[in-house]
Image 1 (cartoon, one colour):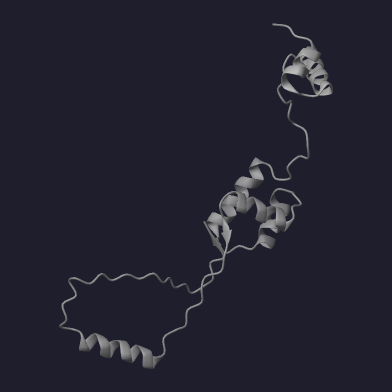
Image 2: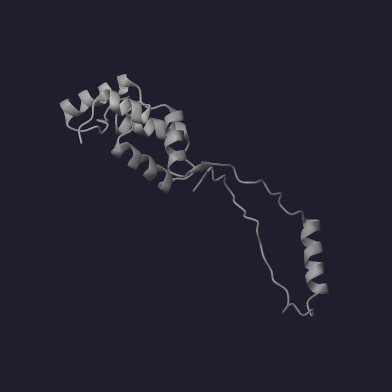
Amino acid sequence: GIRSACVIHRGTNISLSTIYYNIDKLKQAGSLKHQGENGRLRVLGRKEKKAIGQYIRYNNEITLREIKENLSKIHQKLVSTSTISRHLHEYGYKNVLCQSTHILTSVEKQRRVQWAKKHINDDFNPTIFTDESSFQRFRNTVRR
C-alpha cells in the first residue's frame, strides 16, 4: 500500500533525504531504474576494437605503437598505447616474451647421438615421452 516517507524511514532505517529523492524520481520518471549514459565516453568504438583484434590475429608480433599508427591512419582515431594495451587485456590477450633456449652445441648433439646408439635396443614400451618445451625462431609477443 501507500506509506509516508516517515513510516518507510522507521521501518528500513534509510535516510529521509534518500526516500524523498526516490519518491520524486518515481513521480518524474515512473521508475527507480538508473538512467545510464552518464560518464565519459569510450575512445574506442566497435569498429576500432574489431580492427585491433584483426591486427593481432593477422600479425601477433605487431607492437602497440604500430597498432596506434594504424588506428590513426585508417580510422582517424588518436588513441594512447595504454588504451590499446588495456583493450587487449580485457579481451584476454597477454603481452609475453617467449623463454629463451640455448642452441645445442656440436658436443651436445654428439652426446645425444651416442646416447641414442647406446639405448637403441632398449624396451621403451613402458616409457612415456613428453616434450614441454617450445622453440621459436622469432619472438611471439602476444599470447591468447
